[in-house]
Image (cartoon, rainbow, N blue to C red; front, side, top):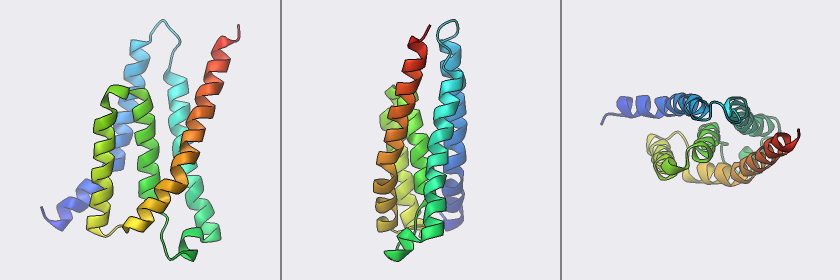
Length: 149
């Protein structure tokens, strides 16, 4: 494949993930019709995860944390990870496929020279646990709200 085609693939990955996330939200809402509707909680969780990834970007832009270590914060990695985490929690049976596509995307970014392996690994380590904390706290709050009469 040519470099231009690989650029198109890389640039299309996150928008395609977002389309898949929206389809998942509506599919889950339709399946749960008449039960506790998952539409609003799912939109909220996806939004919080993406906002968290961008918050890291803004903090890094202000304080130059990655730059201090000679690295570059990978917003591509953080946002893609946010959506992948959402998709894995929303549709567990496809988690392996989602994670495989994410690993392929990371490899493509390295191949295309968007980011280096250290950029991606430090972004993953820095963001992953915070994103998982967001998921845990959000789901705990949703569960608490559903228990109230």
